[in-house]
Every structure is written in C-alpha cells, then in structure tokens.
Amino acid sequence: MSRELQPEALRRLAESLSRLPGLGRRSAERAALALLDWKPDELKQLAERLASLSEDVGNCRLCFLPTDLRKGELCPVCADPRRDRSLICVVESVSMAVPIEKSGYRGCYHVLGGKLSPLDGVGPGQLHLESLRQRSAEAECREVLLATSTDIEGQATAAYIAELCARPGLTLSRLAQGIPIGADLSHTDSASMAMAIARRNQF
Image 1 (cartoon, helix red, strand yellow):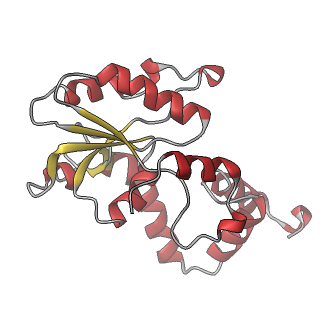
Image 2 (tube, one colour):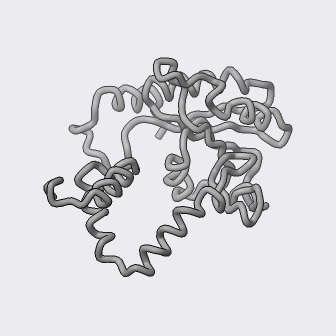
Image 3 (cartoon, one colour):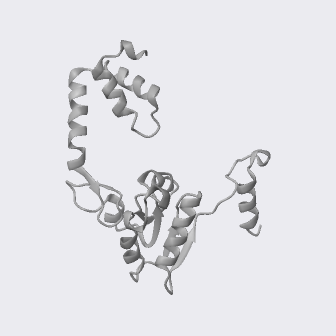
C-alpha cells in the first residue's frame, strides 16, 4: 500500500509491528491493515494485553524462560517435578528452546539472552553466564547440553561455557551437527557434510 494512502496512525503501527521477528515492512503493513477489520472490543482487548505484558510476564529466576508472574517466579519447566534436573540445555534465546521442547526433551533449560559477540559489544557480563556456572556446579547437575548456534559466535560461546563450567563429574555435550533427516545428499553443503563425516556413528 502506498505510503501516501496510509494515515499517520497506521504508518506508526506498521513501524512498530515491523520490529517483530519475521515481519518485514510489507508484512507489517498487511498486519496493520488487517487490524482495521477487527471490532473495537477486539482491538481494546489486544491493547490491554499488550499494556499488561511486562507486568504479567517475566523471566524465570532459574532458567530465564518466560513465566507468568501471577503464578510465581518459576516457569512451568522449572516448577515441574517430573523434569530431569540433572540435565540443563543451554540456548541463546527462548525461540531456540521451542523446537527442542517439541522433540520430547525432558530436561531443564538455561536461556543465555544472546551469544558472545565482541564486535557488537556483547561480552560475558551481558549474558546469563554466572547463574549458569552456579547451576552447573550443583551436585544434581550431571550434564550441560550446549545448544548454541553453529556460527562463529555460537561456537565461541559454547567453548567459553565449556571452560567456565568444567568440573569433575560433569558432562559437557553439544547438539549433533551434520545432515538433517530426509535431506538429499546432493544438496548438502560441504561444511555440513564434513561435520557429518567427522561425527559419524557406528551402524
């Protein structure tokens, strides 16, 4: 939609929506236009939910996953006695924990809040690393699964954590990397193929 045809309020809304992951300028404009078709009471309810978001949702005091502050300081995972507390999966963001949870994983999590990136001004002090070190030092913790990105910053973050948390009796593991299930080998990039070969398993 041409900017000349957009009221200023609609442009401002689209600009705010464009900050959301996965929404580019055009997608944000479409979302803003779609909201015009909502009934006034639906828009009011959405506005109220957005306004109360920071009061109702916070970070779990243990793992930093989102938690309903009205129900306590622990997220559903940390509050669940059925979870395996001996295993902590380290992720950079909440969105990275979602596919892991869907896989049937039954351990606990630790959200770093990013990854080490000196060029962007992100050092150890900007991440939830000290709390991770403390959790991994507890006797009940027997394994820390490093599920950071496979890019340079993610690998550096995993290496830093491995050194930070290393102690006798603690296993430091990394998500397997290589060829995804169902992939056509002819379309596999050389880096993934090299990783798959280097980490091959006995058949």
